[in-house]
Amino acid sequence: MASWLLENYLWLKALHIMSVIAWMAGMFYLPRLFAYHAESAIGSDKSETFKVMERRLLRIIVNPAMMAAFVFGGLMIWANPDLMQSGWFHAKLTLIIVMTACHGLFARWRKVFLRDQNQHPAKFYKIWNEVPTILMIGIVILAVVKPF
Image 1 (cartoon, rainbow, N blue to C red):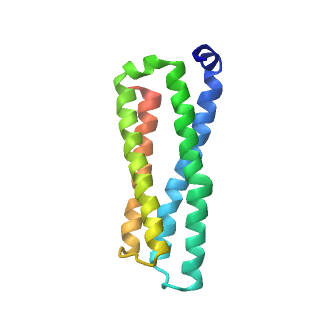
Image 2 (cartoon, rainbow, N blue to C red):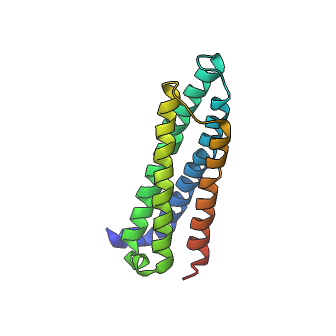
């Protein structure tokens, strides 16, 4: 199996990159939706529309894209286990764990909005909107530049 994966490594890498792009697109947009949602009146049509948008974004795009990124990334490690010997790779995995925790927070906040129990102002979510960007910059630099 590992030899087949290694022979198709570039396909795995392409699928991994596509999955990560979709995951990041959702991670960039979801907290922005939360910011807009926080500014809308509870029970309003606008608030109910945001609930639908947030649920669909998370369930149809963000969650599957994250899982696909993990699967294709895991297959790349299986094909090339020497990756685990590199310091840059351990740093990248650490940032991926932080991104996954961020994903979990966003999923939790979606449920808070669903129950109409949000306590945070729009500015809170606008600040959190920047966290995935910062993490993504670190992950890309580590994966491309491999500084250590």
